[in-house]
Image (cartoon, rainbow, N blue to C red; front, top):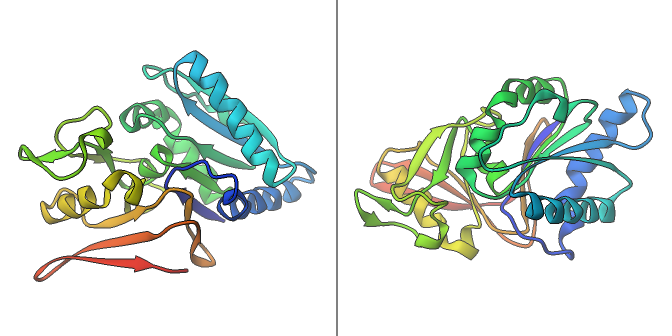
Length: 240
């Protein structure tokens, strides 16, 4: 099974390319349990009214791609998930929002998420859910040493660029909304400053999957690889 990382975005046109691989793997997991419809656990961190709207949006998106049972759990930005939110899941989708809040909320179930993925269930991280999937998660921020390195609007309510331990599903640091929010420069600067050991930046409506079948890129945009080189930072596009 795979870890699927999506850089944000809500384009209906690209939904099949972005979500079908994840749902297909969830369906395979359901088949092993002799269950006809795969159950997808969706974890949302949002205020109550926004959570209701996002839950409906995720149901519509996923059900537009395949026949799935969507089970949504919502906590507010000070809350945390518990393991019952993952019960019976054949795949787990962690949504987007304020990345530091998602990191806090998912921490109590991080061990169970790693166990589920290791047992063969797929994970899909959308925006914040993609960022926190890393061993070292880039939580946000727009300045390094007081120097701007990304748009302030992409700061995630953090001033200095901040990297902390993620939930450890992949060994790449991940930034999202690369072209749309200008966050590729944040990953480049964080790599040059030694805050992270490089990583990938994913455009909106774009999927980057890591699994037993190798790497996969699909959807509307690009995935950018950032690595530290002898003479500076090296940026390349990834195709799959």
